[in-house]
Image (tube, rainbow, N blue to C red; front, side, top):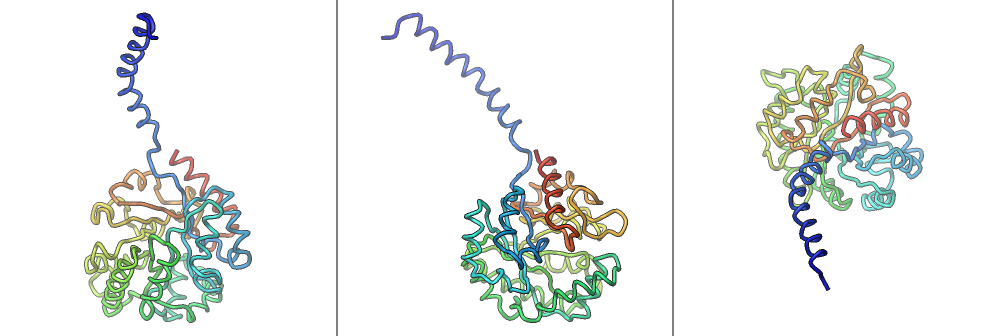
Length: 320
């Protein structure tokens, strides 16, 4: 039975609570993470380790703290010798989510590919040749040009949110037009499967080709709902681009990012937070970009597991 004293005590507490609630709600909002902090990784960074020991390496990735995964082609094929649903189940069992997958857009002229790799690595001939040895398998994997439906179906089988074109030739106007045609078809096939298609840039997309920048040409001539972008912050910055300016130019079109840095001397891939990329500025404009997921990547990382651990720790602190 409620007496007068307990009634006054309870109603007083309710009144106090109602006065404090707006302030508490505001405090909760202020304490909430400023950015999405589910840090992802592009497993290309660990490709040799993933090929040698897929499960063991994935367990180490989970142990570092990564939650979101993006995959790419390897000498074992696109899924480390597994079916898409098998790889997805393995990741889920370890507490991670396979969100995105990289595929090739069209067969590459291998000489052109070596030239592009050399340029991206700051002119390092030895590293470029080493990478080319590893990329011989590119001639054996499906590409969007001939197999976009198969790749879209496999993305759906793996429960992926995104299928991404890792790279495609854009050295001539004809190649740019072909890329647009391929992307629109792939985007339509993905949409029917409940998957979003996107394109990943390197630095070369910002070079002028017959009076056009491939980056602008592709985004202007593709359906903005069918073809999104995965902005590689490292390559874009190396090309002299300001990510927030790209976000302003194409708002909401960048649901994916690569959190990649470039060293200050050779502008070659480096640990996140050690190079030329202003990650705080980029994340301050994440909402403008439409970013949903971001993935740490470091091409040719000298000590892959240690490198990605350092990158993870930097981002965790930045996004806290």
